Image (cartoon, rainbow, N blue to C red; front, side, top):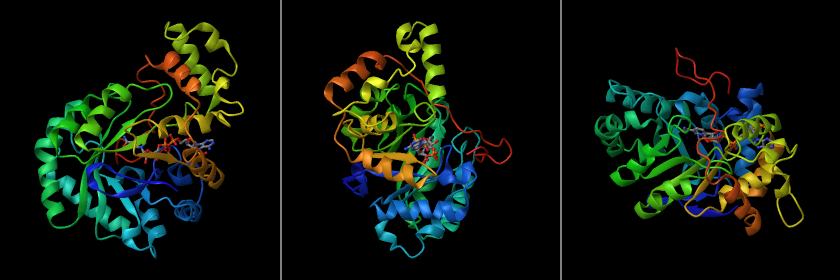
Length: 327
Ligand SMILES: NC(=O)c1ccc[n+]([C@@H]2O[C@H](COP(=O)([O-])OP(=O)(O)OC[C@H]3O[C@@H](n4cnc5c(N)ncnc54)[C@H](OP(=O)(O)O)[C@@H]3O)[C@@H](O)[C@H]2O)c1
């Protein structure tokens, strides 16, 4: 494993971080058992992963807590999040504090390394920074968490408006940002700011559905061609990104997707989500490989550098509990 420093938090973190949400939710979202999920976490630890990202909404805090029992607390960096909507106008700071306390309990830990507001929309940002953050920072004084972070709502804020504001406010030490081969606008819109202000970055959406489900990629390509955003011959190609896979290049599309984001200047940790041990191994191997050949990276930028908001689908949330229901 390789390690880096997560912005001005000073935390030493693995460049590969295990995401406990997304569609897989450690496999719990695809019908696997709690024992399987614990197996994924232990396999990640064995490979040197020390950063784990969960959330109240994922329902994976308890299994993460269980899996980490017996691991020295200072050996791991636990990131979790307040429920969605905590930053919406009218949401009380007491609710945020109650959720922080609940997360500590679910995780079975005395402190959280990075406590994040989850999926904050530009419209909720003012409430988040003026009302919710000050209340949480008072709890930080009591030792409940170490660093405050914020995650964007990628589908609702594809231009990264919220994170751009957050970088300049000095309150947030970590930001979670969406960036992938066909949604590259964080390169210009976000990473110069996170680097300038020492905001650590957790990268999400590297693969998601668009690069793990060939039919999704094909459908997206067709839609983009219909909209005049991509050349028709690319959309008609049965293997539109096949040019990335060659001797000296990527071994597979997913290998390409993780390597593409990993080496982007400004990216600290690439989160990946999986319920499959083999995927865990190959993803970490990809993240530790060198950058894609320059010619391939240039071609990805030429083809897709203008696209915004592609492939950012979110799991469904229960309107009643705010929890992820389909993984
Ligand atoms: N706003 C937010 O705060 C927010 C939003 C999104 C994500 N996140 C965080 O970011 C993390 C990463 O996002 P993500 O879970 O969508 O991760 P991802 O790595 O972009 O995509 C994971 C998807 O790809 C599949 N996959 C992974 N490796 C594969 C492989 N080698 N071969 C084939 N399929 C593979 C997974 O299914 P398998 O189970 O079959 O491997 C899963 O469906 C989340 O877990 C969460 O912690 C946060």
